[in-house]
Image (cartoon, rainbow, N blue to C red; front, side):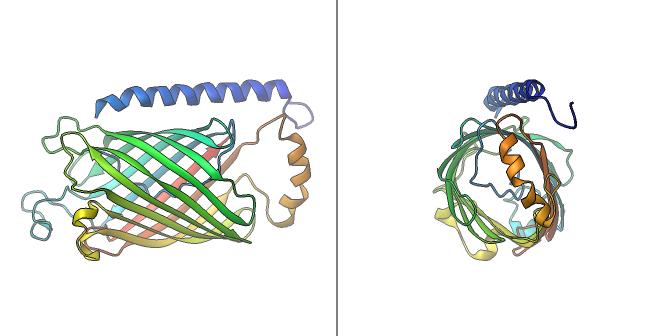
Length: 303
């Protein structure tokens, strides 16, 4: 350190180390995908922006209340006709993202689930990629496409979960402090446990209002239709909605962030800033198959 600034050579070494760690994690994830229950979608809203060389380590977790237990003699058996898996008590995902270019991103995700009456265990590994088609700067539209392969780790379960291929667009609409993000996603089951007749569909959307550079509030909604060929009624699907609070620990409040913008641009080429963001929210189930409520916590470290 010199006068509170990071020397360029140290910044380069740290950046190189981060890239090496991310590459190793991606390689490990790729090897594990040969091991085929996918992780429960952790209320994730994927952004359309990608930055070359940026590494992001993200944690997403949720604790669920009011979920069905379909074990013998448990509540919910009649309603679910013994065809559904036990509901989740808690679920977690750890993801590493790497921006290969300003329009191409790679990520690997490890998912951990705990069903009712079971232990917490690693249940899936997913390899994902994202391509930016329209890069949004400030107000306007951002557009990207994402796709991934999720390998289920069934641990010898007799009635296991299928592997999945998923794909869909990421759409951002921004105007001033308001940002609307849409994540529709189609999936196709693969492997011996696949039981779809058509494609599956899941979605997430987020309406976020930035109070300043550090704080934001919003509403998020998520849902899933396991098989579009047999979608059934709204009540036969999984849907939830709820409020979220966003915190950016890497930014400055109000005009202070704007005053430093020019200096940040000058230093951008010589060093990468470290930023930590998190959000906390509650999702309330709108249908019988969704948990009554879920507390979600997410955090992302970017460098």
